[in-house]
Length: 219
Image (cartoon, rainbow, N blue to C red; front, side):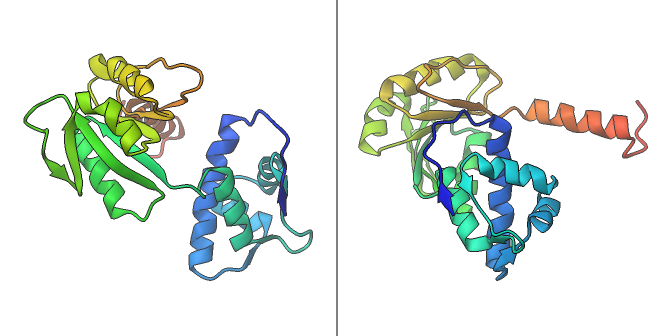
């Protein structure tokens, strides 16, 4: 089992599926499963065996013909592809209801994503300690990113402030941004952005419910 060093443009949907594979492989490892077939893994992940093989083929040769995948080995490789062999240090901007929930969730889960700082523009929140993280003023971002070696900025502010916050994070030297605001922020090419849009997810779910008639709601 070996990773390829070829520089390939990997489809975003493939990366999302790899995360799903890792989740189920982790569960299999926890319950002591040593080997899993591509068919069994596909059933767990809601796809087909050919898709799994195609996704993994971007990165190297995995599995043993007639046997399947060794769970621990494949989990290690997939997590490595996704950056799971690194502890990622997060800085939250916006310590309101959503921000507090994110901090508490991060503390409650055994994760490689670790909140090490939080910032807010409202003075009444500055100085609060949430899930072991002290809220600092926005002006502290520039110094904190370097001092605390923050890799990822998490934006949980109102849309009107999102671009300004993103600009501050970029100037401070952030590596990437997870954006929970409704605004579509713009960043330089070297700073990737992932937008978390709950509204879009709800729209997709409601469309599926309506089109497949999963319930008897009148519309």
